[in-house]
Length: 370
Image (cartoon, rainbow, N blue to C red; front, side):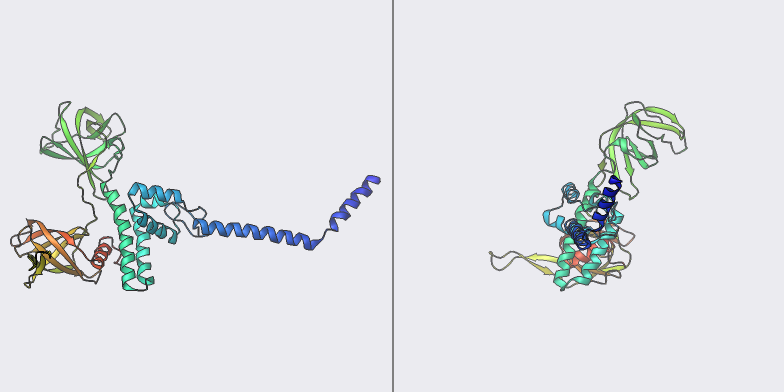
């Protein structure tokens, strides 16, 4: 009975605790938890409940370490890195590496940022400056993809990829069967009448292959022999390190079908004073053509007007999509025949005002299409 009395006494003791003090303790504890949670959101740029995109989620913290790793790998400057971080955080992206490696998702995020600049900029000058920085980041990332092999080595070339085999100046369309074994297996090339062509072991060849985005890469190698596969007769080539890009084009290029342009020849005249540089004089005679494609580095123009290679031109054009005129100074690099009475001029841009550069970028990346 004594023990039961003591137990009852203990129970009575707990029931007589001060309820106000307990409530205060719980409130303070809840406040501390809330402060820590909010500070983490501010520190890491996490938007609760919002999808992180690019392989991240709202429950993950933004990885500053991953951001700087991407910036280093892709060659982003310090100011470009800050712009890229702003784009990522404003879209709730928590995985910079995945996004940078996915061009489609990257353009979706950058297009959103481009539209936001159009709406939020206080002045036209501010808008053009912010757009220029945005596109400088996007072009730097794009250049990395354009000049980086589609596979780190020939052992990582995807199966069923279209390829061209070149032997002694002759080219044959083939497909890659497998690259995971000791050699690269490709379709055995055939002659014009369909018979198999056999090459001796050690024959020097070149293999070019093309990705789904039509980027071409190639490498030199040699024939190891022939074999039979479930896909038919195959030629076996030796592995040969890292494939090289077939072209070193730095900037994305886009074909144009709804534009016309005027261009004028530009000549240089010596200034009256030797201390002054030569001045550019624009000829008043207007010539016309049709832009074929454009990038921020140059364009191709189809025209019936004969202009010699090396000529400097003032070029003006606009498109339905951008609705903004573009004016640039360019130089004709070469001229190809484009038909019976027309030619295609390949022009390198020498000087592009910032507003025209932004317009060209919005056209090339298709940010101004919607």
